[in-house]
Length: 119
Image (cartoon, rainbow, N blue to C red; front, side, top):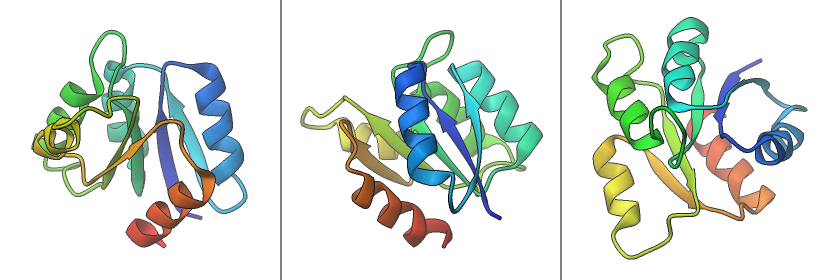
């Protein structure tokens, strides 16, 4: 079963994403950017769902670090964020995110995006 790392500092969001994904994927979780980098290196997920507004290290920073690491740079990162202003999508892509989805997340849209990336 393919593995997804869900990174979000809000427990309710992580639980919601887990409910969307758990039937088809193994899900591991991180609550901040530093933990996201550590968990990605440790678990080598097939995909990362990354909140961008995180404590300790932002999702922008964590994604940038992961994309510079030879071991993790090919893992697709989908930004899940409340940042929906003009230019935010471009900023997320520039940080290394492979795709961008604004919150509140629609389950069908998220699942389609995940399936497109990793099956």
